[in-house]
Length: 220
Image (cartoon, rainbow, N blue to C red; front, side, top):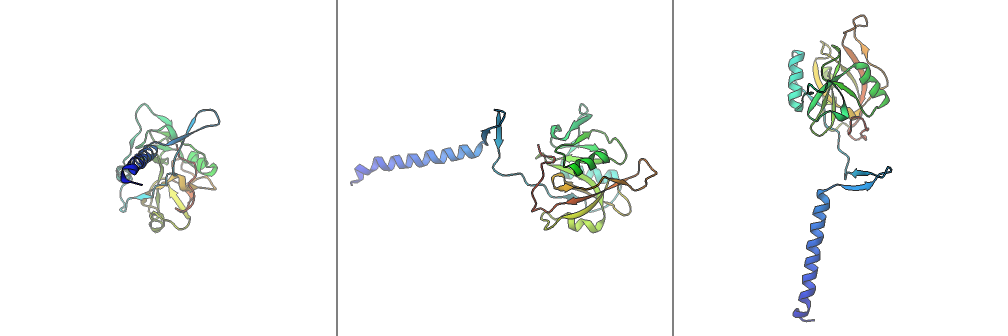
């Protein structure tokens, strides 16, 4: 076949390849949708978002200073004045709030998909919750120095049993933020001093390995 006869064929092949590449780029730029059971549309994401790594401050110091440093590191700001109480799923990204220990404990025990956050700490021993820019949730607390090397690595080969204190003490002076989707517990938090209503509390929990599947908790 002569070059003159094959030139239209070559042109069509090049055109089809160009159109195919353009369609691939367009499809990758927009998430696919499928019909939900209710008749609406549900976004289908290509991959599940990975849980963030634990974030910590290496030094110790006054509690207020440590909290400010960790908030700056996680790039979160106080909830707006109009949101004195809000569900985690509805809270703006890049914000932080507080939750009573008993409600956090219930959420971790039942693996509840959402949390009630308050703009101001409702109690002196409330836990602080960070909602990162990507929507991930982080629970802030204090741990013993020996646990830092187990909690800090982004890749944890096995589950870590964690005692997370609501406030610092001589025993647990290091502040840390751990990913909410990787936490689970089989018990409620307990007060360090049962006779003191404002006593710091400790919550025993499992920080699951980085290889385990994330729960739906804290996910929008």
